Image (cartoon, rainbow, N blue to C red; front, top):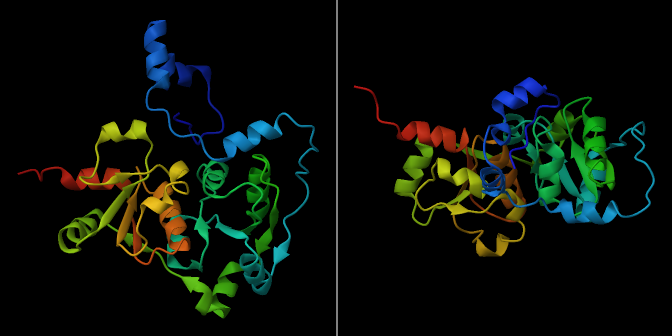
Length: 269
C-alpha cells in the first residue's frame, strides 16, 4: 500500500524502515498491513486476465515511432490519449490541450494505468530520449497500444500555439485566499484513504486518483476546482485529467497537503 519509487534496497534498510517488518504479533501485523489500503489501479483486473493467457513477449528493443504534430492531432481526434511524461513544472508551462501529465520520474505506469482505459491508443510527449523508456514501462502493464511520440515537443508547441495550454497552480497562501473569496470553490483531495489521518483541508472531497474516472459524474465541471495530493505528483495528473474532461477552472496545489499543513502552523513569536 506504500509502494516506494526506489528500484533497489537491502535487507538492513527494510528491517529498519519497513513498518510491516517491525516486531509485532500476527494479529497486529494483519491489522497494520490491511488498514488504509488504497484502491487498486484500474489496470489491475485487466492485467490479472492477461496473466491467465498465453501471450507474446514484449519486444524491449523496438523503438517508439516519431510522430509529427499533425499525426498526433489526428490520433487525438480518433480517440488517442496524449500522455505527457515531463515534470509538473514543464507541463504547467505549456502542454498539448487534452493531455494528461503523468511524470516519468514517479510511479508512471501505475498512475497512467489508473486514468487511461486499457486498449486506448496512446501518444507520448517526453523529454528528449525518454520516449522508449515510457513505451516499455507501459508495455510492462499490458498497455501495448502506444502509437508513438511527438517529435521535438518544444518546436511543435512553438509552431502551434493554438493547441497549447497552461496549467493553473496555486500556493498554499493563494488557496487560502481562494477559499475565502471564491464562492462554491471545490477542493478535491486525491490521496488514498490511509493518508487522510495525517490531516485534511476542511470541506475537501476525497476522491483517490484511481477512482477519479468512475466518480467524475459527481463533480460539476463549471465550478472552480482545486486538486491536491500529499506532495504534488498526483495532483497535476488529476488536474490535467479534469481539464481534459472539460473542467473550465481547475488548479492544483503546489507542494500538496504538506505545504498546506506547514502554512497552518502558528508563526513562532
